[in-house]
Every structure is written in structure tokens, then in C-alpha cells.
Image (cartoon, rainbow, N blue to C red; front, side, top):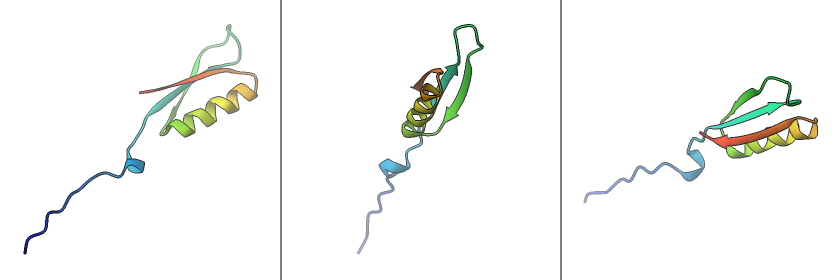
Length: 60
């Protein structure tokens, strides 16, 4: 009796890469932070925005 083994990567194990950009004002240098998930990037953006920064994120 033979068995077929399927090696599938679980959806929650998929690696994501996100970049967050932020700065306090238009005169300040843009800074960047690397994140490994969308939820982490969204959390970082919200923290910066709550602290008065301009911030956004995108998937790499």
C-alpha cells in the first residue's frame, strides 16, 4: 500500500514582508522600519500616527 504525502505550506506560515515609512514633519528625513507581517505593519503605523507622525506601509 502506497501513500501520497503532500507538503503544503500552511497559510499562516507564509512569510510576508512589509515596509513602514514615517516622519514627524515634512521637513524631517523619512525613516523606515521593516515588518514581517501586515498586522505588525498596521500596528506600527497606528503607533506612529497616534504619536503625531506621518506614516504609511506597503508590502514588499
